[in-house]
Length: 124
Image 1 (cartoon, one colour):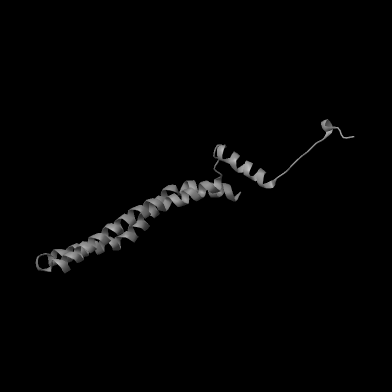
Image 2 (spheres, rainbow, N blue to C red):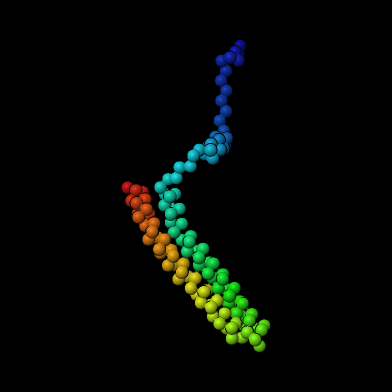
């Protein structure tokens, strides 16, 4: 005789438990660990320099193109101004990398105390 009141059934699925944990993680408040904070700070140090240098490089390249266009297409009227415009474009492209390094260096100096504090905590 089997009594249905005394039966116990248990099913375990590792996939299901993992899915439950992943869904639960989405709704829990975000807690940043110190290593994650350190990575974000390090990435954010270079971001302003990248933006400025990319913008400068793109504008310089376009300016160089306009200068080249002036010297080749309208050579009879705009040859000399085209050369000047092209040289300005070249100067902007050449300045992009030094601008990037300067801005990134300043940003790193600014966040250095926080980076050092976090690394001290992580090394202990």
